[in-house]
Length: 254
Ligand SMILES: [Zn+2]
Ligand SMILES: [Zn+2]
Image 1 (cartoon, helix red, strand yellow):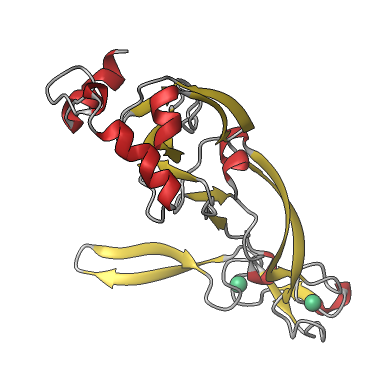
Image 2: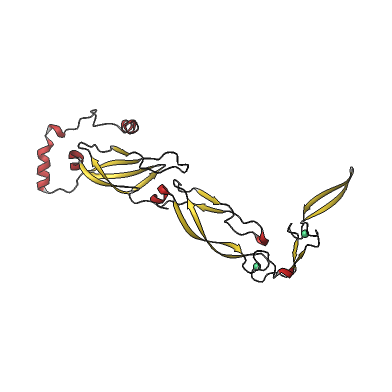
C-alpha cells in the first residue's frame, strides 16, 4: 500500500491462491449423489456411543464417529477431480476493503475466506499482511509523516515560497525569513489517521540548510564582503538559536 491508500483506506481486488471447493462434487468429495450413503458405523448420527464398565456401573459416553468424522455420511465412490477431498488447489478473486490508518506489519483477517474445508467442512480465515511502501519523500513516524526539506542559505535568510510534498500531493509552503537550520515546521492534521479514526497525525517539515561547497572566485568575493557584517555573526542564546528540545517544545505548544 502507498501513503495515499494508508491515509484514505483502499479497496483492492486480489487473486488468492488457495484450496477452493471442488466444482465437480461441490465439496462433498463424492462421485455423484448415489455414491453417498449413510455411515454404517454411526447410522448417520455422526456420533458413536461407548459403554464402559466402571466400579460405579456402566458409563455411557459419546464421541465423534471415527468412520465419517462426524458427517454421518460414507462415500462409496470418490470424486475423481478432487480424489474425494472436496477441495482442489485453485484461485479466487477477492475484494478486500482496507480501512484507513493501517500500519506496516499489521494483520487483517477475513473470516471464511481462507482455504475451503475438506469434505465440505468450514473454510479457514484469510490473513492479510499489510505492507506499506516506502515513499521517496515522506517518512512515516507513527501517525506523523516527516519531510526533510533542503533549502539554500539564501532562502533561509530571505525566506521563500516553495512547494512541499504532502500525502495529498504538492502544497504551497512559505519559508519565513530568518529560518534556522534544524527548525521543525508542523502542518497540523496532514499526517495519517489511526485505524479507529480517532485523530490524525501531523506532517513535520525538518529544515536542512545547504552549505555551498564549490564556489567561483566571484561568489567567494561576494561572501567575503558579508563575513565581517555584524548581522552575519551567530548570536547564540537568542531566540533564533534554540536547542533541539526547545524546538520540540515549540512544536507542541504552537
Ligand atoms: Zn470433487
Ligand atoms: Zn459415522
